[in-house]
Image (cartoon, rainbow, N blue to C red; front, side):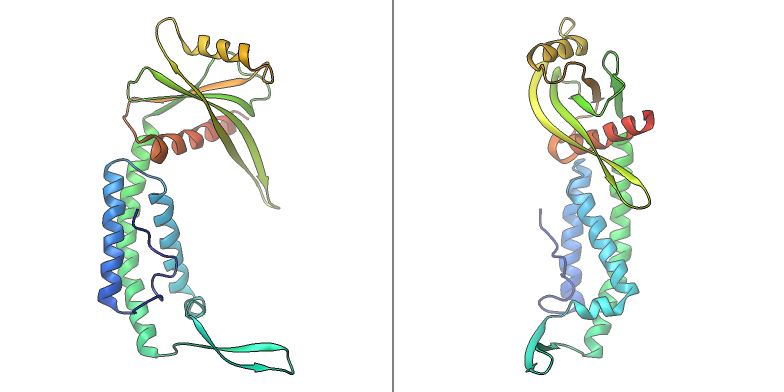
Length: 238
């Protein structure tokens, strides 16, 4: 992926046409990945860049702070170094504002494209339990199956909780275990039973299937959306 640096607006040559070229080239690559249903890290990266632009537009001090500095002296009385911003040119600041004002609507357009792709895929993902679900369903197995394939990818999972003074957030850690070939005899229930024989550390694990008929890039799309789907499913039943 052709990355867009966090400080892409203020680094290197500050020129509207130059920055426009860099930004549009980045968005073109992002759009190509969305077309191929590759969402990560492209969607989250685009969201971060858009939020940065919005913050810069609303806070000119933050924009000014992004410029590099040069050492101009030292204050022995206050035991500190003295730095000076390399630019205070109003023309440069106006050029940057022009770049921001042009870039934000462009990014909004592709954010809508990414969200549309995300929503379509999420609507075509199904989550359901395998067998009885224990009272504590914060640990167990996830069976991932996509694109009409007979192969089921098995992961173990562990739910985590992050707290702040206002609310709690659920997260999930998943680790790859093994693949299984699903068939009329090798059902999800038999896969779960087989796993129970070899892992005595989880005598009564929760097990969930996450499946879709769509053929999706595994690492860039199906796995991260599967994680989010499991967290939503467990949170809704908590």
